[in-house]
Amino acid sequence: MMNNIITKTLLDDCDSDNYSLQTKALLKLVDAEAYEAVPKIVQLIKSPNSSVRADAAAALGYLGSEEVETVGPALITLLDDEEELVRSEAVEALGDIDYTPAVVPIEYILRNDPSALVRASAAETLGYLEEASAIETLELSLLDTNEDEAVRCYAANSIGLLGTPQLLPKLENYLNSELPLSVKAELLGARYWLGAKEDIAKLVDLLDKADEDFAQHILTILTDLTEREPTPNIAKDVPDLDKILSAIALRFPLMRHQAEEILAQ
Image (tube, rainbow, N blue to C red):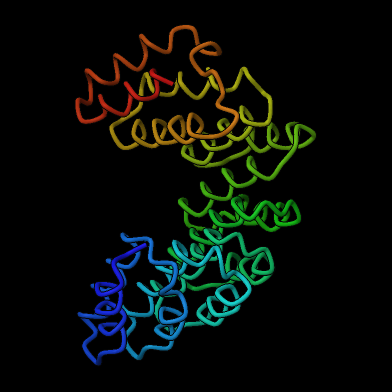
């Protein structure tokens, strides 16, 4: 809990007409884990300034988990905000506070929002909300050839988070269809998480000929897997993982640290 004097100063800044002061105060309240500031932050989602609304939404994602019944509906009101960054932050905050009543409106956003940024946030957040009913909508985005590639990648990842091993044959069929390589990489990660142990080796093998951007994409998938519970033993499932990741670290030195962290799982 913050020092009461400092808290009051930041809350006073939230009440000011200075948008810069408000955004700075929001960041400091989050850093200080000032959960008592939530009622004040909820008021700021109605600010005429889009940056303040976006920062307020993000702050509620960090601090609103103890007042979900108030914060959730407040964030829902931002899903039709005119600014894409505000909508994106609101979607992600709803996932952060695990507000499951948001699943249906977020599914709608995934298929209908004009912004790829917001649709990507929606695809990612549906995976965190743990409602398997969203899989059908995620599949629509995954297979939509007109959809942004990043959105399709997030959809594949979320399907893996929400699915069960019974979904593996369908995902294998998707792998054999015409999909961008980045989306197929995500599907390999999803299938591995659902029990197809052999698919992690297929994912790692893609590193051999990957350019820098695609190599980073694959490392991000591997990092995500190592941060889940229960943590999968990727090194056991890919015996030559050390050799492959060491080669990547030599080719792309900026990725050395990430490669080492994956090996240290």
